[in-house]
Image (tube, rainbow, N blue to C red):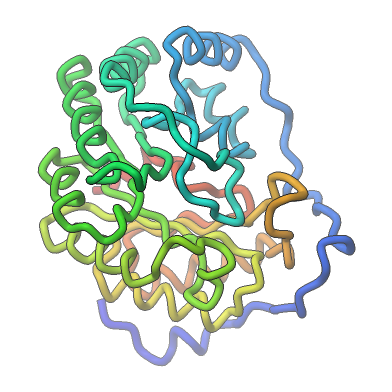
Length: 303
């Protein structure tokens, strides 16, 4: 869908000058209830019994109470130690353990036990592996399909350092949605995701779309980006055919991570959602607490 000048003429966001983290207080709209309840406790026990990890826990997702309470979770394969040191991420960095070859089967069993219809699978970065872990994404998709016929599968993959043969392994396993997060605007890549490259992200999403994948990506806001930079990235993403966009507020996981430069208001997220739809995204999930897998099952339902 081509966009005209009217898109930029929409009511613009009120972009404040960045404040130091010491001046910022978390606003009311970012307060969520603590995780708990019978379903949450049961799922947590099941994950530990199967030695599985979820990005819900590792990344300290603010929606864990809502999603786990509804019986959904995003599985994180290839262990819980990442080879990269992104400034925003709570997952620990270091030297990972060897890949567990039984992990795909255990993930599939957990999906079956949870009784979910849409499974989301992501991973840490495993740059020490020749294919970045792509083979294990494919194996996990195969196991879910084998044990859970009818379940749709979404993957949120790393950039595989731009290796097309690694991406092809995932594409050939035919996930229902192929996601890879852009995370931030190009100007901030060196600070936010120093081992990533913006052109790797665009190339991965473009090639996936070229081969018929339903593609998805996400951005965090509040790291010092400017409105015009966000809109430019949105245009770039539509230019490579991305179908689904998520926009959420960055939250500093620990004092050792990048500070929040500003809190984007719910009204501003609504404005960005409108701009995204005008640019041609099929679905835009935008809000302070939105994360990559938030309401993921709805994105499949719209395909």
